[in-house]
Image (cartoon, rainbow, N blue to C red):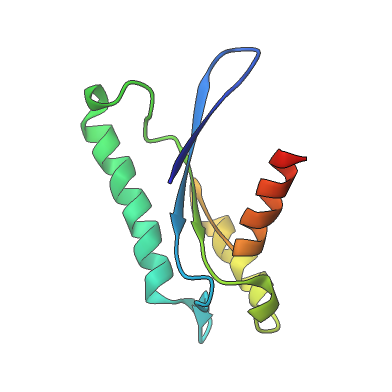
Length: 112
């Protein structure tokens, strides 16, 4: 899913790309991201590489989009997993792993 927003002052378009995975999925196993999470991150990186190689194929979207992998639920995170997610997100560039709870809270904030 790709969402376009526009900065009202500058008129500059910004894009956010969401990779939606299963809400029931674990994010980590034995301290490492599960394969499905790394696959979603790799897919976002592949899109970025394609956009870099084909800049004339899109009007506004470029490789500098914000990417989110949405998977799992906050209530099912084992103890300490929030810290693992935070640390992992700090290592990623331009991409974050979030739970469906984050997505729901963001949607509610937009509608409020």
